[in-house]
Length: 241
Image (cartoon, rainbow, N blue to C red; front, side, top):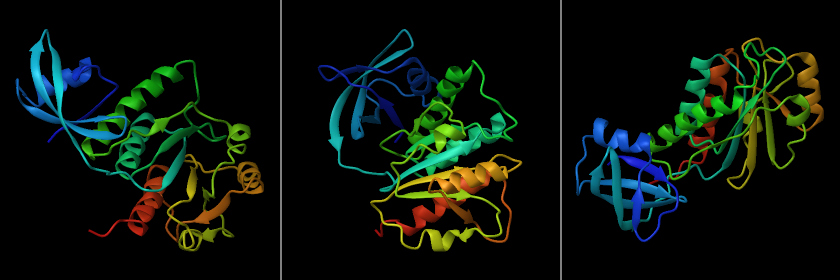
């Protein structure tokens, strides 16, 4: 059953937004009395279409469903700004892998730079993670905040584990870094751009509590690194059915 997200509703009546209405009518070909899953404030419901008027879908809540399909851990991914297609891929797949928050990072070697269109970019990125959350049956949508520079990044202190993914020869293996991680820990993962971090960036991050972490012998592309670490976390804390 298709899943959608919406905000608060009143008197058991709700109006789906334009994008969702289009998807329900044109893509899913739903009609009156058809049902779909609906997430409101992290709670899952079954909704039923009451009418379709002027390309707008009106629906009502039928029942609430007990369900929790989110990664139990609190994980933030800091992804250095990269080309649009690669960034879209990271947003989509990290959402599927349970990330809670995504922070774009303006690295020294980032090819893509922050400009006055950042608000529009965040709006577009938010749509991508919303759709990925619906597809992967999540009950929450990752938060995307405005990009940070190095001085802002090192001030993020409210984390138990701070991972800096690098190819530094003195880095600690990811297996060792995550060996004592608890499900209650808040984790932040920082990924560099295509050209990697500068020595200055790495030194500054490490001086502020980030652990220089190696992912093994193979050097991965920037769009792969965060997904690799999120996959490990998903595996380590996957609930047995």
